[in-house]
Amino acid sequence: GDAMTPRRPMTLNLTDADMAILDELAKRRDTTRTAVLRQALRLYQMVEARIEKGDRLLLENDDTKERKELMFL
Image 1 (spheres, one colour):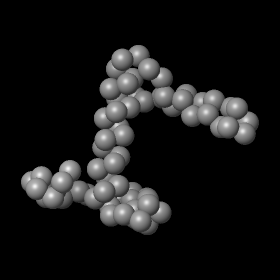
Image 2: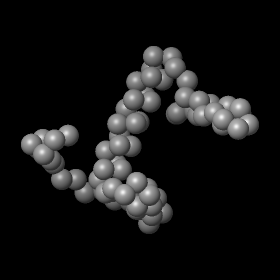
Image 3: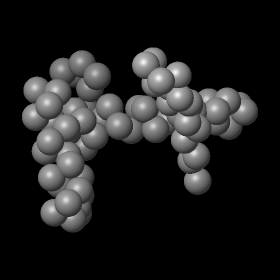
Image 4: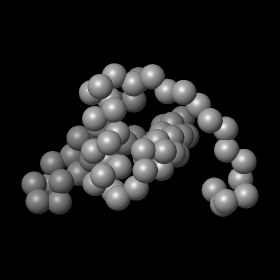
């Protein structure tokens, strides 16, 4: 979103383990925790939409050619 998009604050209760994951992702991507959560929401929304259409979510390793399907419940 741009700077003119209104923002709504939200309190989020996370475990220490979840907060550590969020902090690590933000640090690794050189961004904020809020930006990581926004990206995660968009990714989840896109994955859900594709699965609803009948697509599968696969991870493939270029070296071993191993493929794994991720199951979303």
